[in-house]
Image (cartoon, rainbow over all chains, first blue to last red; front, side):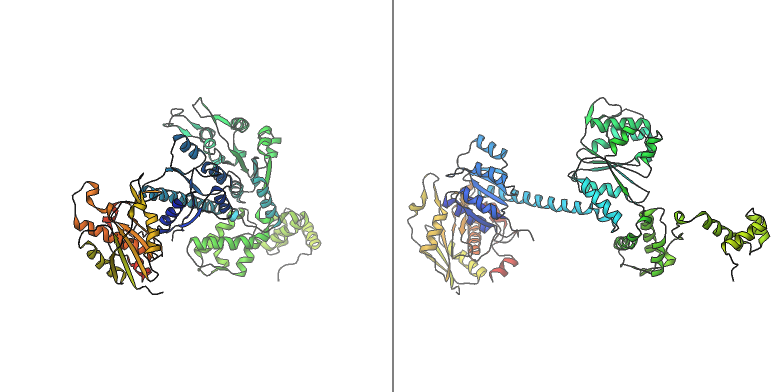
Length: 446
Length: 175
């Protein structure tokens, strides 16, 4: 049911107040009256009214002054000014000061109904706009970023602190760690959130295509340019541009990009008009950009221009404690999108998922859960629903001796502990192999 | 307090038999006895020479204070052009959930708009206006049902488009 519109009538004439009150009450509105501007402002400080219908000529503070005060209260009320003595100047002044409309007394009943209906529509639009904005915020929120680990909490803290500024940010991390999500979260929490976030996957485009994509082109600039096209920098005006895989751009593009970042203006391909755009730059890469600078593969000046803030997202194997939380999150996400009841996870499957190395990071885990839900029995994710997975290897913790021991044992087992054949395969003499078996305390399987 | 009747008090000249035709529909819609009587008021006291109209709001106050009773719903019927300070004209007005209202036949006549006189249309418009204003005294606000008599009407054409009966929701509210 539609909300009851509230109207505050401000007029020094009692007969006007009473007749309007009666008229609006019959229409089902909530109505209150004030005999002067001062009283009206007092009422508005404690209560919010959708519409304020105010006379322009009142003793003390007049309607126009009251209008200014209402606007300074940051009230959402729509103000309609009434007067018996209409002049163009006052009407223009009222509208300039933020009045919704200006009417001359007396008016036709139909005009009054139209006026209030239009104002009500405006109120509905404002409310609808607020609701939609909230929805957009919740959609673009960091909701998709899950993690209780200290490493992820640090990432969230960095996002929060950097979002409000206009500083350029480089987001680093392995493939599949969620770099684009971090960029979205920064944009969604920034003052630019109501303007577009434009993403460009630099690695997917050739140099000439990337140039046209970023700066736009004029009709006839090259074969196939049959119309004028806005570039991504132009589209991101007042918003954010996200340059993914920034490390892949060519040296020529690096120069052009540096110039755009410094001047915030550019020329479309084939054009001659300078176009300005107010954008914020976020970039992402899975490469060691600093190392590339040292090797001369990436311009140092561009690196420092982009790398005002660096957010590094840890790989999933370094935040194992987040895996159960992520599993739960993806199960909910895919079960609801496939309209299925929420499934549980068999302990063996959970253990396997927790010990896996995830070279593809969260993207791999997400795909794994989606697949398991699709192929599973609809009640529980079983071990057999998971693709063949290697357990998390821990090469950094193994010594050369340990590796040698493992390898020798593997070869011995392969050749059923035939010492001659095994020594040949290992390119050792038999005595050395015997010595190693003794040293490592290896025994044949029972 | 139990309602006893609806009182329609006419001030000024009304065509013979017109009120009788209205009374029948009013009785049916409100399921209450309706009594008509002639009233006397010095209308010049309510006349605004600048606007050449009669102040509807003051007339409503007068009907409420001098003619209405708690046990009745009283409607003053006029044959003059009514206004309220803020509007150029009104067909009628009533206190929401109150005991009094007013209605005028003046702007319901075809002749006012340069069209031939039509008695049937006039009766139809007037009964709708009377039932509408009485509906307000029973606490009904304007209704969005296009056929309901409680739909807001700012032109005679609007009155012609609606029915003289309440919609189901409005009927439920007054019963």
